[in-house]
Image 1 (tube, rainbow, N blue to C red):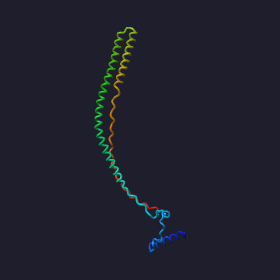
Image 2: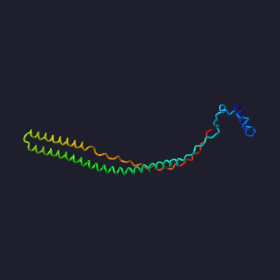
Image 3: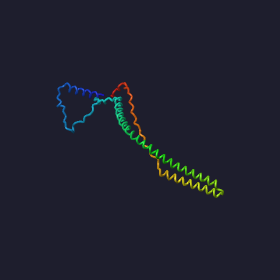
Image 4: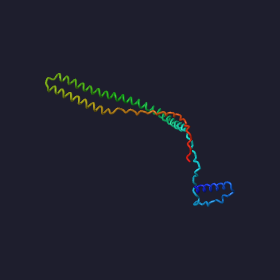
Length: 193
């Protein structure tokens, strides 16, 4: 305890003598060579610079403005793409109408071939007097229907797949305006000793 107090008194006396006395600073000068210069140390009483205050409302509004500008660009692109999409959809509708008409012709031809095979089978059964004639009528019907199925499958293969629908556009989402953040009036924290 005595050592700490005596050191404190000595430090006070030296600092008082420097401030009040006419002591020249050259008497206390130290050789200024780089090897003997002590590295500066932070004094315990020095305060760190304060961080600038950040207003969360300003930060949120700045982010909102940036998002709003990006939305305007995306919306303008969406409007330009919508015109192209509408033209592509009109072309798709025409292509689908043509495709469906060709598909209907193929289906109607198949149905007509099956109906003709059934009609011929019914007439052959009515005219048949023996079991062999009835079996021959049934075999002729099966062969006609198989031929109609083969023709139908070949026609569908030649027609190909339905035209692909253009990819739908996604409308950009408008950013929402941030709500105001009320500042808190909390008491200031006491600095640590």
